[in-house]
Image 1 (tube, one colour):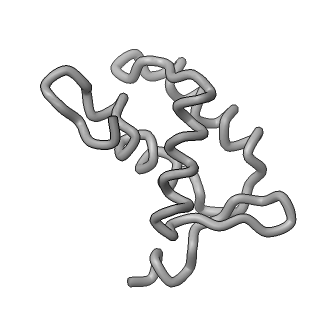
Image 2: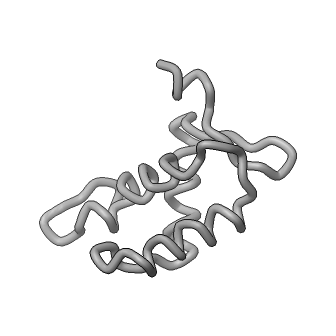
Length: 85
């Protein structure tokens, strides 16, 4: 679930979805805007299957637990300490 396995491709594992989320966080964005960006990118790229909202939220929760993202004023942003390390 978190890591890819023989039966779970990297783009479906939470760590892969989390990497995709971090890649989109150059600037703070709302959760709904981030979801729209991820969903639209996956619909354009035929190599990455769509994910549902629950899976997106689980990946976002994982990043928050790891300390990679934070939320201020309803905006998700990368944690600066993690990003600069």
